[in-house]
Every structure is written in C-alpha cells, then in structure tokens.
Image (cartoon, rainbow over all chains, first blue to last red; front, side, top):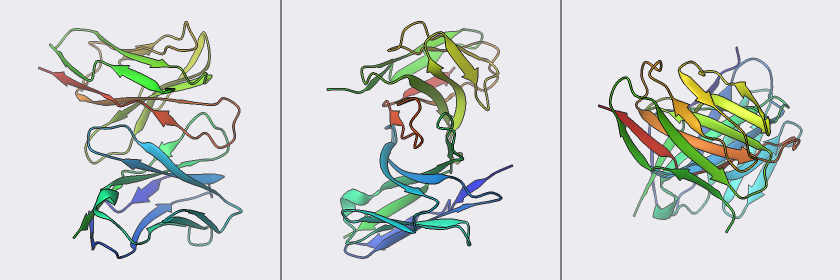
Amino acid sequence: SQKIEQNSEALNIQEGKTATLTCNYTNYSPAYLQWYRQDPGRGPVFLLLIRENEKEKRKERLKVTFDTTLKQSLFHITASQPADSATYLCAHNTGTASKLTFGTGTRLQVTL
Amino acid sequence: DGGITQSPKYLFRKEGQNVTLSCEQNLNHDAMYWYRQDPGQGLRLIYYSQIVNDFQKGDIAEGYSVSREKKESFPLTVTSAQKNPTAFYLCASSTRGADTGELFFGEGSRLTVL
C-alpha cells in the first residue's frame, strides 16, 4: 500500500536560514501533494499544493518541489522566522478528492 | 467569517459512555471529513461524506458512527466499542468535485477517557 513518510525528528534552524523539509512516498506517484502547517492544539492550515506535472511552486517565502523520479517533495521556507515554528504535514491524493493520506509531520523550530 | 466550528474543545468521558463531537461549517462545502490524530502518527481518516444523507467509512471507522442530515453538520459519535478513544479529533471540509481536495480544518476536539 502507498505510504507517505516525513522525518519524525524535529528540525532546528537559526532565524534567517532556509528550512527544508522532506516528504517521501512509496509506490505510485500521487496526482498531487499538499502541505499543511499545524500549530500545537490547533487544526492544520493548508499552505501549498503541487501537481505531479509541476516541478516547483512558490508562495511568498515558501517553495515546494516535486520529483517523481526520487518520489519526493521538498518544502522550503526561506528567511525563516521564529513565527514559522510549527509542525508541517504533507498529504497526497491519487486523484479522488475524497481522501487524503497524511504523513506524520515534521516539527520545525526556528531560533533567534 | 466562514469556517468550521468544532465543539467541545475538550471532553472527558468515562469508559462505556458514548460521546458526540459536533462539527458545523458555513463554507457551503459538500464534502466533510473526520480525522483522528495521535502522537507520532499522521492524521487517520475515520469517516467522510461527499453529500447530504450519504457517508463512507475511512481507514479506522470501527467504534465510530456519523450522520449527515444537513449540509452544514457532520457529527461524530465515539461509541463504547472504540477501544482506545483518547485522541485529538479533527473535522474538515472541502469542495466536492474539486480535483485538488484542499481541506479546511476546525480547531479540533480533544477527548480523554478516564
């Protein structure tokens, strides 16, 4: 069965640096990948979506890439700020909008 | 403001009791979902509904029940048959038929079984 994997270890970076989070999937390539941000005790908030025929997507300081050869999506936050500290979830769907499968999330901690 | 409202935010239950979590949305979305989140695990889909009066089981539906009598509402009942109900429950909605399926989440309900 399809699995979606994120690094369970927290990522600690210094303010101003670029944070890079990884999302790997097994087996077949999903139609698209989504990235969400989740703060402690809150619901996830949608950030970006990238389709399988897109290499890169940008939104302000955020950038997502999708490499179907490596079966991987990378999520970048440039010029990171302490306010970016949160858990970031990736999710995929194979074309049916009804069900998303989520990774476990990677916690990002940005320090001064 | 449009959004999804879950209640209660915190709920305590004794073993053997059924509890119902409320989820209301005013986004005019056709599709609604219930996920469960446990530490160290991804969100797992319990039930989803794409249209009023219809719903499907997700990956972990055992011990749960839902109804979808109104477009705006999708309550989840955690029954006494659910063996490990302590968790963070998230309700979400999306536009039906959209191929992207971006989800809008509520703030969650944390259920603790005493």
